[in-house]
Image (cartoon, rainbow, N blue to C red):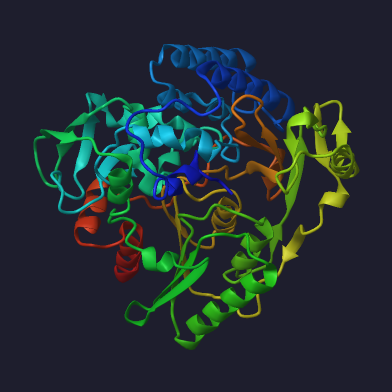
Length: 492
């Protein structure tokens, strides 16, 4: 399940005493940061299941050199955190976390962008009411940097599988924090924006705020409007007038018995109320167990389907075990390393002609051909809401719907691949100098007997225009949900 960079720091900003000025990192230097970045790249080249899947060595090394050159030239150590090398591997499952006590004072010391913001594709939108810049206004430039360039500057949190560019969907309420890291020394922000319906842009200057105020302001964001439907892992809403039910699924990391009860209760209620349309919202679903994706699909499937995965990886050896952690966060012992490698050796066979290890029959557990529809399956119209926050097993569910032609996908391209992604088992390493935690998946997973991966996610059948997005939010409506309801109302 994907998490954003230094996510724990954000909670610390509520409870740690503020400091008077920018502080250095605790326990490491700029050189330590560079040394760990180089170590992380070396380790990823050895340990990642397919490090050059979407690039080649020459292009990769050129981009890596460019990234390190930018780090050298950046005068601010805190903004140097933005040059994390994991963004070069085009893998949404890679994760790099910093220890809070080593960086939290720096986040407290910098000035912060004062407004809550959100995104629509490559646009930045004001996400608060009652501010100098109206809610819903499009921010064109901040401190003379265009919005699209700003979003590219925070690539360390918006990277996705392959060539997918919708990762900004996952920044959520933290977008303004990442904007602040682009301008860590700024005491004010010159903002060029365009209000809803205006012909010409306006320029204003906003005073930067301290960390506590910044955190508070970010929490006041209007979007997402469907916060109520995110109060639990699975929530349900029934709109009988529209003959529509909405199922919001935030994760597929639930146990099968819990998942089945939630789904069977929902679809039983749909049947009882004679509802014709079901909207399944997985825009913020970070994945989990793909078998739970198949379980959900069985409730809308009209005929048996294949729930089949193929696995492959470049290596089944655990490199640098001296920095490897076990599931409890402790250094992995020799016996644990041997047990893990034996586990992998028993489940992968090497194909010398292709240079990959492929999963054998022992990895087929859970894969089912001709998976039957549930006995209480829904036979009406299905609409699935997707975004760049739809990752891993959630993308697999969207792919099941698309490939079996069972419903309409609405939103933006998913954040992980339609044909495959990396997942299965994960190894976490402590980087020697900064003590950061680097998490690496062990295997690629190919869905539904796919052989190739073009590096793209599930594409939506219907996508909102920016003008429609603005109209909906100014009406106080969740854009994708209301757009879908309007499609249903129009008989489409």
